[in-house]
Length: 219
Image 1 (cartoon, rainbow, N blue to C red):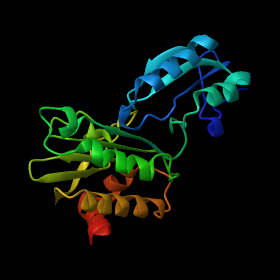
Image 2 (tube, helix red, strand yellow):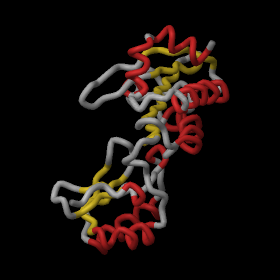
Image 3 (cartoon, rainbow, N blue to C red):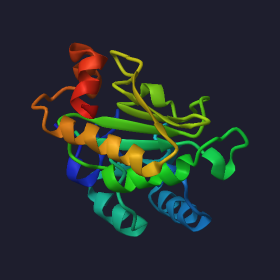
Image 4 (spheres, rainbow, N blue to C red):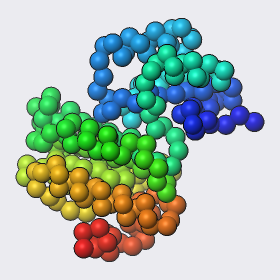
């Protein structure tokens, strides 16, 4: 029986014959040349396109024999749409584009994406970086969520959607300093990698309690 092909980033579809893939588009930011290339490949192989909640473009309906050719013609890095790893870093427009933005979520988010996207972990992890309290990156539903305030950044932990949804807890507020945020995120990820449990981060936060978790991360 066919199944997902992790090493090719290929997700088996409902027909149990064809696959979907999603090239990595950090923060959903791309250019017209990349879009034309994706469209050309989709036309060539008769594929459906879908915009995903992880700010990617999924190509649907690929035959297994065509997977290598499609990836070669796309010449793009796979998005981590499956597997026990950092799946996505969702990023809102922030002060780069949005009139409501109070901090530069694109700058911070792209740094986080560059460091952590596809990193192997005990379970899947999603991150979100929002440039204001409206939280268009849905940061409270992410394993690690970051939300801008007028004074800096609010770091949330343990959120997820899915069959057992959970709102994230507030870990800490920090000043408007990207390096400080990156330091805290690195502490969370490092602790999680070595925790010895193969469950989502939110389950651990829930079991420990946010105060004990905060003590583990921040001392």
